[in-house]
Amino acid sequence: MTDEERLEQAMHAYASTVTPTPDWDDVEQRAEAIRRTRMRRRAGLAALGLAAAAVVVVALIPVLGGDDTTTVAVTAPSTTTREATPTTPTTSPATTLPIPPARPPNAIWPFPGGTTFSDPGAVAVSFARYYLRMPDPTVESTALSARVVEIRARRDRPAVTSVTVEESGGDWFVTGARTKNIDLATPEPGNRVTSPMRIRGTSTAFEAQVNWEVREESAGPGRKLGEGFFMGGSNGQFGPFDASLTFAPPSRSAGAIVLFTRSAEDGAVSEATVVPVTFG
Image (cartoon, rainbow, N blue to C red; front, side, top):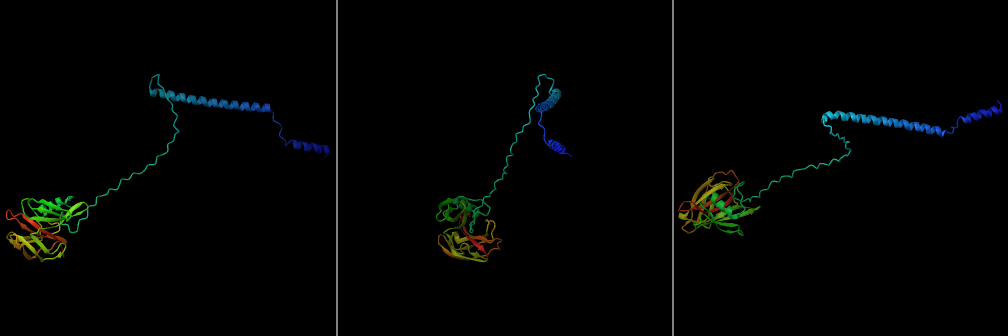
């Protein structure tokens, strides 16, 4: 192969790797053709959309009625999204039951679970009427400094019973009673007693007779463990007494000794000494 042939072959090989310069007129014609094709496609799609909308409107006219003035409104679906509001669970406040006041350990009246009293005079009158069975008790005086309410069995009765009271949590309780005409020396309040029980003291009463009862806790006049009478002084003259009281076995651990006199006029309770005790 000659040198000229080698040169010609090399030139042809190089020419095959070079991209020829484009014809810009030809490029513009092809671009215009592409734009026209796209426009025709868009026009066709728009025509199809209008035709579909017309079909929907025509279909709705029989449903909406034959009125020529019927207007069909097409509303685009809302794309607005709302954030869910978190729901705070509601809890009912805990019901708190009222706590009853602590009952004094030596309380005699009112009985547990009975009526409560916010006035010391009211609880003393209730005690005299329902526990002692006085006919028409009235308050003679009140000395709260000494925790004492003085009661008469009736307004016209001369004897006075001093009812001792104690307050707890705003409520008042009766813890005992004393009359100067029946002075019980032993047992003392809160002492432990058994049957037979020995009592000692001084008293004065009509015909010297003093009545006694032993009651267990929460027991009224009709529920007695034992009852009777003993003799002391009379007609305003004090005399000693020393008696032995026999009573039935109690079902509760606490109770009271009730000493009282009756009126010669009608037999009603005139005055009383009441001492709380425990049974052992």
